[in-house]
Each structure stands twice: as C-alpha cells, then as structure tokens.
Image (cartoon, rainbow, N blue to C red; front, side, top):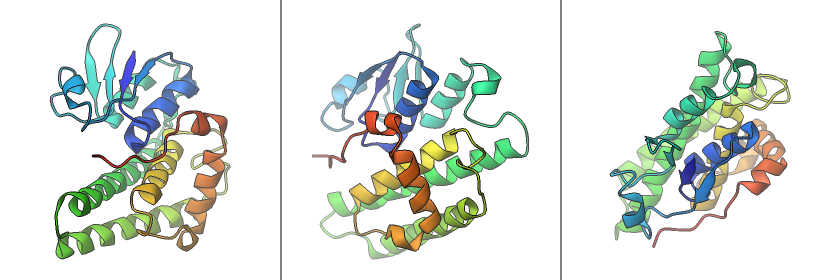
Length: 208
C-alpha cells in the first residue's frame, strides 16, 4: 500500500496512525496537494489527501472510506470502531464531528490565506460552527471516564479528535484556547504522548 499525503493533514495522519497500530505495512509518500499536485493527479483527480493506493492498483480516497476498508482487513475484535451498537454509531459521530471541524478549519485557513481580505460573515459562521463542535466534544469526553473515548482501547474516534486538534492549533494558532476545553485538552495530551502519535507526525507547513 502507498499512503499519499503529508502528516500535517489530520486526515492523512489519522490513516497513518491507524495503519501503524494495525501493523499493516505501507509506503508513505509525503506529497503536497499544492507543490506535488501533478504527482497526485494520476491517482486522485480531486487532488485531495489522503489517497491510498492498494497493492492491486486500486485507489481509495477520503479518510472515512479508507479506514472502513482498512478495518475490513483486520479481525473484528481488533477493529478501532466498536462493532456493536449503540457504541458504533456514537463513535462514528465523534469521528465525523472531529473531521467536519477539521474541514471547517481548512476552509477558514484558505479564506485567510488566499484572499486579500477574508470574508467576515464566512469567518464568523465557520468559527461558530467550530466552537459548537468543540463544546459538544468536550462535554461528551468529560462524561466518559474510561482511558479512551469508548473504553480502555484506543479507537478511530480518539485518533480523529487528537489529529484534528493538533492541526487546528498549528494552522490557526489564535483560533481557540485549549484551556477552554479541558476534557479535550487532557485527551489530546494523553494521545499525543503515545509513541505512534510521535512517529506519525509533522509540524504544519502552510501551502505555498
């Protein structure tokens, strides 16, 4: 397998961490969607990452789709989404909220980076969405006393939230304060201290 994309993307990073935790070997090509667009285009015409090239030559895009495929490669008892309800759909919701917040952060960053004057109404709307998700996730995490979000074993929801929080704090440092969301802060500190999070990591690099 070949994982395309830089680890400063929370979406690429969550896939890299999951593959590593599962012990699934892969080659990493840290291509930028801007600087390396022509390298990515033959695999993914959307020019988005992560892009996963399978050994068969087939290509998967979107982190949710990629992880759904990857989960099918491992025994059910080791999958990082719960396999029974209601915990399964609850974990999917947490991951979806986190990655949706990541998407909003990217939109906010691009609006500021590529326009002479950022749109004030758009910025206010995006910030309100981000803060609503932060508050929702913080309350959810605070209500759970296990080591990880859904028990004593790390899952995709834990990885998604941690990766997105790291990207948000580096891409737009003044966007929010971790002190305002103590449960999320404790969660991301715990996860970022794990060896796999240190291994699959890259400081944010602004697109040029």
